Structure formats: structure tokens, C-alpha cells
Length: 603
Image (cartoon, rainbow, N blue to C red; front, side, top):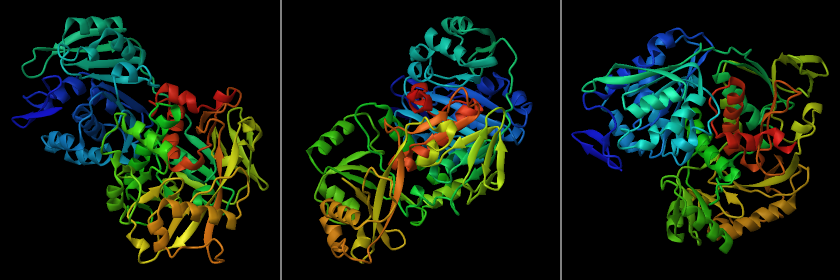
């Protein structure tokens, strides 16, 4: 709902401009940077501190870019910026780009934002820039619902909704009370508005409020501050991570970005040697029309993983390929589920309905069912993602270590038969089904399920496949000359490759895509040369991952486990969840979701 008047963006919904016609860049610097005294506050930050800005109204992203630009030029190298912004009606990426091109001084930062912005759906979105020195958490939804659900405290507020006369919801007293409750001691706020009810609302929320000279044609603006002195917590940033699969690699990366020294311990000779070692993993986001915790987590995690992949891996057909993902309606129940999902307000750029003919066009081979398509999903080589996440110089990997965990009274000790491997104040167990194998985590109700893939050699005909096909199972375009088809599901703990599971996968493939099955020369499970790989997936009773602090009596002990078959979607976001716990920074998920993942939910 955007118009352009004399080259300037105007909201058709609210009949208001996104920034001053007299100069949006100078207005942002005057009102929000100077109004919150950010130049001097950024320069005075201790080396390891994190400064948090909260904003009501992301709009074109101009204020974020202006704050990022100032932070990059004035803050000490070890400091970090976390920007949290709300937006009920996010702009499309094309409009965002057009608006920000009005400010050439921000071109370098504009490119970074556009590279991760995508088309945000309703929910919370976490982006990282400058190697993790700057984070953006975009809360897409009504600020009156998203901000009360936010875990974390803010140092400075940008109150930048449309005019209070045109968009009163963003200036309500109840929302201003929430801002006060989410503020640190000494937090500030600034806004272009001098409306009396805004001034009174800030005062009622615990701020001292005063008028300051405005920008352009506005004679005055408001500044505010809460009493007290801001304190910058400086945790001892050393962590031991147990487990070198996706879960461990992702939490190590999230902590290393924040200045932590991480020692990752893996029992195998190399990382990603078990369930995370499959040659291909599919970004399969099975959504529900109901906002269940699992469906909300899958949607948030899917979009987060795509941002991580774009930032960290080459889309080269070996590490990652962003082929479309087609979820085919293999029976009436699945068709009904898909229809219900399509009735929810999801962006068309994220998910769309396709007929059988449209699915065939996208796949490159005949498909005889309709379904839904994720245009940018594809598949990942999980070991490549693990290696990319562990490539930070602050991460040390110690392999071939079968360890036990001791301590908990200030520091944790990770030991093997030869003695001490690492000592740190924080220990994170991310060892799949073995996560419950330590006395401190033995109460976690985890189990493992077996899954087997079948590997099929590419043929000239099968090379035409351009999309991941999903139904009762999946098959992906070839990587390095091999297609992956699968995966089976069985409640046992054997990792041997079985002919019976090959037969199950081939039967699934025949139903999913008769054309591809024929293109692969109708493979047989009885062929002794048929290759495959089996792994064990760890799951919880409610099928949600288990992520967070273990308990009151094990201070400094955390887990990230039970990602099941969704590790590619949930593990990267879970690394950010643990970083939020440890850094006391704004979380990437609403508080209710943080509690839904919490290990103590089983107590």
C-alpha cells in the first residue's frame, strides 16, 4: 500500500510520508541519533558491550541504516549493536530498495540489508551484519502484541510510527508503558512528535520528558530518559560445546559472533559425522494453518536458515542449491492441509499454490499432482554448513574426544580418559540423542529415531530435475552426480543400511514421481550396488527442540538438542536463542516460544 509522490514514498494506508521531504537522512540523524545522544554513547561503550535500540515502525529501514552507519564509525571494535524494530505492514523488497536509493551515503549498508530482508512474513526475523557485530530483529506484527512478548531490555528508543493523528495505535498509553517496562535504567527515547498525550504517556511510563528543537518545519520534538545509570554486563565469554553436528556448530557460530571463545568437542574424528553428515538435507517447511508452536518455529527457522545460507555458503550446487521445493498433495488430507495453509496471510514470494502443470514446469519433469511451491528452498550439504559455521577464528574444534561433564560451581570441566579437555563457565550440550547421556541432563525425555536415505546415480534424463519433490518422502536434484531419496522412519537405534529401507524409499519415489523413477532406470532395492546412508535423529515427546538452560541447580549449563529431521531449519535459529539467553540480549522468538523450547517444560 505504497504511493510515490515526487520520488518520495507515501503510505496509502495512513496518508503520511515515511520521512521528511526536507531531508529524511538529516531528520533521522537529528531526531533519533542526536535525540538519544548516540554519537557520544556509542563512542563511550566498553569493548565487549552490546547496545540495544528499539524502534516502533521499521518503515523503509532508514533509521536502522543510519544507526548502523554511526555505530560502525564511532563505536569501539569489540562493541556490538542490536536493533529491534516493529512493523505491521512491511514493504516489499523492491519498494525498500527504491526508497533507500534516495540516500547514496548509505549504499554500502543498504546492500547488506536488502541481501537479508527477503519478504518477511508475520513473525520475528533475525539478521546479522558485519560478521555478527550488528544484529537486526524485525518483529512483523502489531507492536501492541510483539513488544510485550519480547524478552530483553532496550537502551534507546526510536518512536517513529506515522503521525499520532493518523496511526494512533503506535502511540497508545499501554504501548508506551510496555516500552518503559522493556527499558534499562538510564534508557532514552526520542520522537519527532510533541503531541500532549505522547508526552504524558512517556511520563506515565517512567520517563523524564522534555522538548528539544525539532527538524525542518517542526519547531519542537520530544526527548525522554528513565532514571538510573546504565550498566554494561561483561560476562566471562568462554564456552564449551559438546557435539559437532548442526546443533553444536550453530550455537558455536552464534557465540563466536558475539566475542565468545568457544571450544567444540566432538567424539568422532571429524565434525558432522552422524545425523548431520547426510550428503543432502532439504529445507522442508511443513506448515500448519494453526499457529502451533511447532508451525511458528518452522516458519521462523526456515526463513532464518535461508538468511544464514545466503550469508555463509556459495550457492554452487555442492554446498547449497536454492532450487524450488514442491510439496505435492499426495492424498486428500494433504490437499486439505495445503488449502488451509494457503488461506493464511503468507507472502506469495514465500509460498504459492501450483497446479500439476505448473509443478511440472518448475520441476523440469512431469508431475501428476498439484501442490504448493516454496520458490527459494532447495537443499543443503549439511557438513558444508557445519564447516562454515565453525570457521570463525574464535572457535577451536577438538575431535575424537569421548567426554564426561563435571563441575557446575562456577566452571564446567569437560574431561576424557586422558584428563581435562576444556574448562569454561558455560557448557552447552548439543549431542543429539547422547545429550541425555550426562548425569546433569539425564532427566531430559529424549529418544532417537532411525532414518535411511537411498543414493541414486544421476542419469542424463534425471539431470532435468530442477526442484526438490516432497510428498510422503522427498527426492532432490543431484549433488555431485547423486540424487538423495528418503527418508525412512523407524523407532530403533540402528544405523546400518538395510535393503528393506531401500525398498521403502524406492516405493515412495515411484509414487512421488513416476517420470523420475523411470528416468533413473527403475532402480531395484535388490541391486547390491545400491548405496545409502542411515542416521539417528533425536526427538522430544512434543517434537519441539529442547533449547535453553537446563535448570536452577546446574548454573551455566545449556542444551540444544531434539531437532529431529528439521535440524537444518531449527538449529541455526536455536543458536541465536542460546546466544540471547547467555548475552541477555533481545531474543529472536517471542517469550512464549522461548518457554515452549525450554528444557524445564518437562519438569
